[in-house]
Image 1 (cartoon, rainbow, N blue to C red):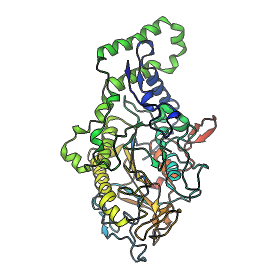
Image 2: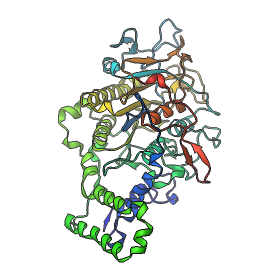
Image 3: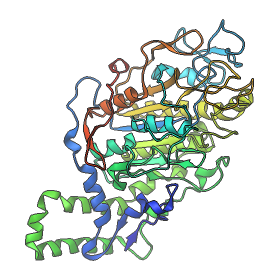
Image 4: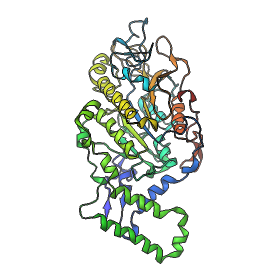
Length: 489
């Protein structure tokens, strides 16, 4: 048989929670050929017709890349600098002009400053948190559109649970499954994490494991910048002793079984089982998914342009995946949220860490992805979103979340921060909203994270109010918010 192996529960905090998506991806032999993966593909088509008819720019998205800046980057020190403010508010980095008249970034983003005219910049992201606004609760909100009442005094949540609301990517692939034999949802190069809470907001939750992302987490420490050179996707290969023609012969056994059991065949005719078995077989035997991960096929020039580091090469892989037909790719910043080196969580040593570590990788990688997607024509149908769970406090050295902060550090700040969108009908060269004099709060057109998710759904032609049923069979909206039409062309 062909088996796509995976250590049970390895993608979760608690191994006892069961098998991973890779354990589900199994193509068996004889009459059970493709049963598990075939069932997975069938499940992904359930209620796919629930999407809403659209007009204008809505419905153009065929794929989405979420660049998730885990840790909460400082908007003031990146793309919303302020002048004529007190010293403890002003960024230590110099402002620079961008290609958009009157719009400035800091000196940390020279490359993005030259391509920002291909994007929409949202300078008015804002929300008021439930309890303390620490990472895990904020990550769960932006990934699912929902908050939870299970927030500890530190702001952290419980580990992932089958009762969780699904990640937005899981909802998308359920309602809009891919048209080709390709992994529908991929998350890389590391899980969402704060301290020991790993993967919260990154699963399909009550939708079931069939809609979990395929996780590509190369081994090695977070500071290993060459992790993507160690990508191993042997779990998407046929075993050496299984030849293509032998596999096809096994597939034909299904026809024999169906012919011999007409009553069963009639009973399941409406479930398109043959179609799902064919897709299951195609995913493994065609090599489409495996080839998409073959980053070594890219030229040295292209790989250098993205940056020879985990973040840059993950962005390059995201482009290859959407080219191959993946619906949803989530690139998670390759450093755990509450940590030091290369993290956006700059409670201390902001001036060094942002200038020499996080910002150069971010600026090089994201600008390369924007340019590459646009030059290849992929921005026509690919929605690109870059966002963190919140921004950083306008004043340095103050505590806003119970954390200690040095004079050269900023605490968590959900009341005002910045996000970027591009492609799939979004406006080009547009700045949405405006922050006040100290970037503390929006003064124009605030956007809640749930509204951003609603906009993502609507870009796919999916009504944000589409009903999904939870583990108790209770109806729930995909998200309780409306799309922001002003972001679309």
